[in-house]
Length: 220
Image 1: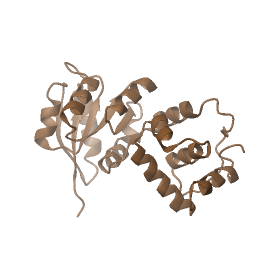
Image 2 (image 1 turned 45 degrees about the vertical axis):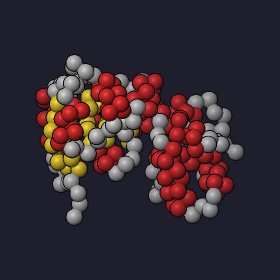
Image 3 (image 1 turned 90 degrees about the vertical axis):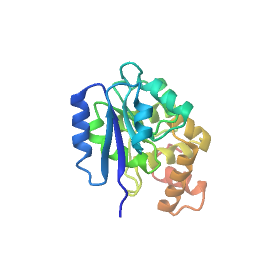
Image 4 (image 1 turned 135 degrees about the vertical axis):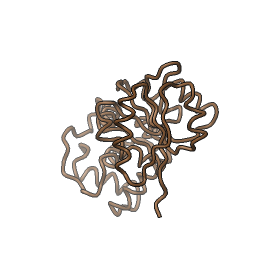
C-alpha cells in the first residue's frame, strides 16, 4: 500500500492556495494537511501536522519565505521544502538551495510542475522546473568551447538532468563541482552517475565520456 504524501501549503493569497490544493488533491496519494497565510506560524504548523512536504511562497507577509527557511535550517527541517517564486535570479536560488531547500519552481510553471515536484522531493530528490534547470545549466557551461550548442538525439532512457551531468563529466567537472554548479547535493550527483552508468552499460567514467563524444554532446 502506497503511503500518502502529506503536504502543507503556504501562500498569502487564498485563491492560489485553493487552486494548488485542488490540483494536488487530484493525486490519490497526496493529502493536503494544512495551510498558512503568513510566515510566522509555518514551522509550528508543519511540526504539528507532520507534513512531508511544504510548498512555500517566497513572498509571505510578516516573515518571508527566506526567513522561514532559515528558521527551518536553525531548528531542523520538519519536512521537505519546495519554493514558489516569481524570481529566477540564480544568486537567490543558490542561497535558498544552500539552506537546505529541496525544490524551486517559478509561479509561471508551477501548475505544470507542482505534482512532479512534490513526488520528487518526497522521494528525497531535488527538483527545479525546466526553465530554472536550463538556466542553471547554461550558467554552469557558459563560454565553454567544448560544449555542443545543439541538442543531438541521445538515448531515450536518459533524462534531461542525466544528459546535463554526462556533459559536465565529459567537460571534466568533478562530482563536487557538478554539485556546486547545479545547486544539487553531492549524493544526488552520485546517484545520477550510477543511473547513467547503468543505462549506458558503462563500466566507469571513461565510458560516460566516450558516450558524450560519440553522440556529439561535446566537441572533441
